Length: 90
Ligand SMILES: [Zn+2]
Image (cartoon, rainbow, N blue to C red):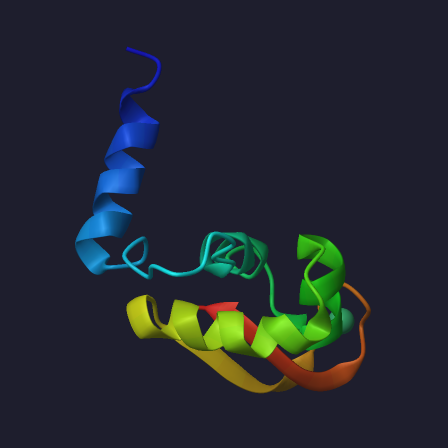
């Protein structure tokens, strides 16, 4: 019973193709999507929050944007409060 919601989430992601990228065991999309669902974050903060190298964050955002609507704009990062390019889901 307790597993049902997670199964449903995974299934929904599969239907969107998010889990269908093979050849990479460290798909970062869900991590990044999670980080920018609650707040607009700059690349540096996404890297810090997810533990990913900054070089992989841009690629990860592109992958997330393939399945979810990602807004990228100049604004204030919620984490470091810099006025810079920030990313957010939706
Ligand atoms: Zn930041």
